[in-house]
Amino acid sequence: DEEDTRMGQPQAQPEGTEAGKPPLRVGMVGYAFMGAAHSQGWRTAGRVFDLPLNPVQSVICGRDRSAARAAADRHGWASVETDWRALVERDDVDLVDICTPGDSHAEIALAALAAGKHVLCEKPLANTVAEATSMARAAEEAHARGQVAMVGFNYRRVPATALARRMVAEGRLGRLRHVRVTYLQDWLVDPEFPLTWRLRKEQAGSGSLGDLGAHIIDLAQYLVGEPLAGVSALTETFVRQRPLPTGATSGLSAVSAAGTGEVTVDDAALFTARFPSGAIASFEATRYATGRKNALRIELNGERGSLAFDLERLNELSFHDATEPGAEAGFRRILVTEPDHPYLDAWWPPGHGLGYEHTFVHQARDLVHAIAEGRRPEPSFTDGLQVQRVLAAVEESAEKNSVYTPIAV
Ligand code: SOE
Image (cartoon, rainbow, N blue to C red; front, side):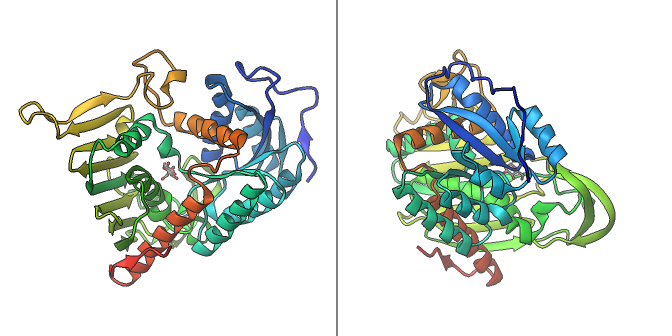
């Protein structure tokens, strides 16, 4: 497909990223919900943070030209492609940002790495362990050539979760005993909600497990600082037939057409797990938790203290310091809005909180630094592969009536 560049409209340099800094020219594939979120990240990162490279929104790609054109205008992209292969081959693209459903991640990422591009890929990294393995291998080889490949587990970039990681690493909780994690949403409660791509195995890989479970697996492993050793799981699909959608998805949903189709993914996934150091964990991922909107909650209990986080109150972290005198100890709320908290020195005056979209700004910031410094990014494709192995072990355990399933290394 021919390129659709708006001539005579040079992209404005983001404020604070004065000319002179080398550009990082981004090509993004996909323009729906995640495309919009990543666009905000690229547009804002250089305005808020003093970055070593200047992100430039070069080109956005979508199969429907007029929809992609509209997304480009809305979200600030200079040009449009309708074939991702053309985007990947463009000389004015340094980084390919993959915001498509999971069934195209591997093909696009492998082509982008082969073309010498850096890559940011939405979660979960792939739909199968085999795909994720080839992506992680290609990323390692590309790293030796100076390329960087990151997977988009954006909840590591909430200031409160980054602070929690710092506190765990500093030993504030001591030896960990319990990790309790849930990710609860309710957008599938209505049985008339249409059969969008997130409900089809061939596109999404799995259901709540890959969509939400992947986030909490990554976050738990990141906070604890080690990979899971094994899982015992059960999964369930509550509504097996849903109305077929028509037209494009909007947000998470779409307009329903006549007829129904089969839901081929899990609606909910529950599992217990072990960490190698001895901590035990429980996980729950569902899109049927009536009244819970985006309730990613994690609690860590250690010998010296506990931490608790809830994404629905994302500017807060609860901390119980068990080394304090018993009569005064108790959970206290840390308002994670201060300049000495992760990411916050670049934002607003003290006390002014952040939201969901800022995680994508922080993600862009961290990726730009990794590229400029030639560092392996966190989370890398190898980290994404490890999460994929946990997802596969959960499915295997559930098929075998919850038998304990070690995570292959
Ligand atoms: C829908 O469940 C969804 O948008 C996920 O796809 C995202 O990964 C999560 O961050 C928010 O919820």
